[in-house]
Length: 288
Ligand SMILES: Cc1ncc(C[n+]2csc(CCOP(=O)(O)OP(=O)(O)O)c2C)c(N)n1
Ligand SMILES: [Mg+2]
Picture (cartoon, rainbow, N blue to C red):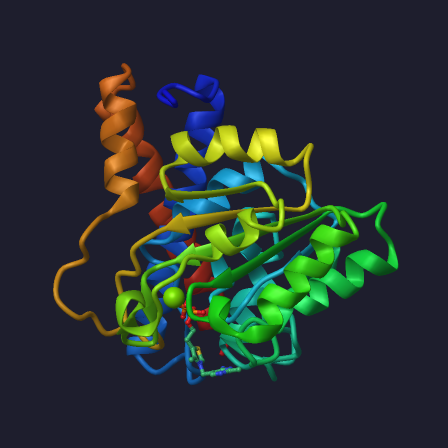
């Protein structure tokens, strides 16, 4: 199947802008963590920006359940930026009154419900919430480590039996903390779900590949997409082991250049997003 050029040009640029916005924001989180202005553990999405940036341009869910690595979803779906910054800085004005920190971020105005610590628990919660009102569409995001929790498959199977309108996404960075998938298991969740009739895809997190699946699947929910991605920093905190294998943002930029976008235009977007994030973070840090 040929997926090249699956998006209108304005959508491609919107996705690129969102990816740059997330990268710029996360770089500021890293900076404030490294200077100890942020004191809570942080779970960064640097390298994993493409999935949320792409989904949010196409799918408008009523409810969003993410795991501990949720900053990119919060930002992509329009969560309040002041409140996430204050949350990370441990302030009363944060989205969880400064008590939850990075893994629990949420904004009920966009239907996003925060994570409380057990990996994959957001899957049965998403299923239960959608069962309660199946006129609502739900997005549920978890990691490849969480996919191994028994309650994840059983909850997804329940959603399949009851045809609940949930788009399940696994951000598969091939890591559960530091352990690679091939050491942990010899099966793919897509195969298990295919066996019970759920529409599935197992693809790299390239926006051009994700787009057609989202467009097709949102009319056939529940459905599941395993997006293979690359985390650039440590599981928690801001350290880096070696060189990341891929940088999807850089690859997407190259793709946009190949189809005729000007380098200056793309660099201007990157610069603008970096400046916006820097100004916003400075404003919050100066209030201390
Ligand atoms: C039920 C449960 N078991 C173990 C943990 C400890 N733990 C926290 S994050 C994590 C790895 C999660 O990996 P993954 O779901 O792939 O998400 P990623 O960090 O890669 O985004 C583990 C094992 C936990 N929080 N909950
Ligand atoms: Mg993982």
